[in-house]
Image (tube, rainbow, N blue to C red):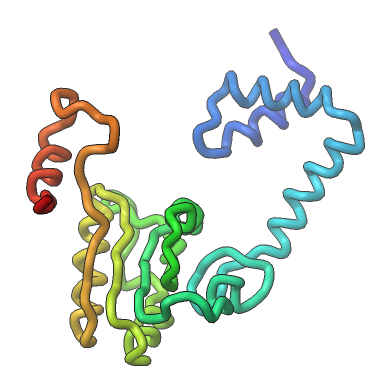
Length: 197
């Protein structure tokens, strides 16, 4: 069945969003069409405004509409701990834990199979933070995959040139998970990262 061209276009645009498949895109498009006109305009304007006014903080890379961002301006944060993350979405998750240090966000997808080179990353702000002497610990909050591992080793090489402790988020079993269903790499990481009680 052929859909109206504007509806097809809306579905095609929604499919481009992460985790949105064709059926979900169709449901969202139909839902948007049912919204009162004012609400659909507000949604469209919110997307345009966010796209125009949100940018990476010059100090840490977190997404903001003021520079420096609210996290960098917060004087109650521990400036001696620097958490390095891949994306702004990682910071949102880490903030929910109550972490009170500072951040550096890479804001770049790095994939070994792509045309990416580590040297293309803008790490000057990261190096400047380390050179300031204020940072005592760098926490690498990178994804536990092969690309995250390569990135962790690369950043460790940079951080080791300064007098800082380098740590990485623990890997292993999720809370509530069953050992029998864990893959061997996850189980190995859990064994390596075991703690004394």
